Each structure stands twice: as C-alpha cells, then as structure tokens.
Length: 145
Image (tube, rainbow, N blue to C red; front, side, top):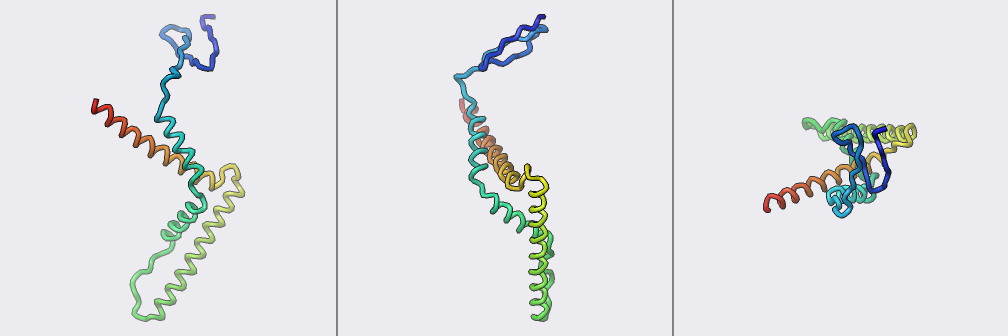
C-alpha cells in the first residue's frame, strides 16, 4: 500500500501531488485570534442573553404586526372606547395563542427548545458581529503597513 499514515494529535493529513498522503504539522505557536474572539463572543452571548425577555419582546412584536392598528378616528368617544377595548381583547387573545404555540413546540420538540433557539441565535449574531469588527480592524491595520 502506498499510503502510510501516522496519527499524532498535532498533525493533520494533506493530500500531496502524488497519490499518497503526507503529514503536515500544525503551527501551534500562532493562535488564530479571530476564531478565539468569535468563540468567546458566542459563549458570552449564549450565557448572558435572557431568553425569556427576548421571547417576550418577539411575542410583543408579533402581536403588534398581527393585530390591526387604531385606524381612522371616530367622532364618538364611546366608539373610541369600544374600539380600544376590543383591540385590547384581541391583542390578549393573540398573545395567548402565540404563547400556547410556543409551549406546544417545547413539549413536542424538547431537544430543540425555544430557549435553546434564542441562545444559539444570540451567540451566532454576537460571533458574526465580533468577527466582522475584528476583520475591519485587522484589514485597516494591514492597509497602514
């Protein structure tokens, strides 16, 4: 067999020009700062973001989008009060429906809980933001040299 492989925790294998595999040592003296910062940002956001507050705000935004606004003003104050009361009841009903759907989702799919979704989304956004800021700073640093 032409392929000789050896395993070392500090080595990975790269396919060479020929039909065999050559081992290439990873450089351990250089640490990828961008990867470290991205991982750190993900971890911090994952543990620091309060998912309950985020879900409450998302439900509030969804209800605002689903329930129609105040519309044109009526001339009668009694009709205005009635409209505000019916709109308030509709908003509460929609909010309860959304929260029941979220509760059903958590019961049906316990391994993909809404809290986990919110935490992972926050971590992904934080990681992307930190990496883009790091790339901007690093890019500006390289242009100066």
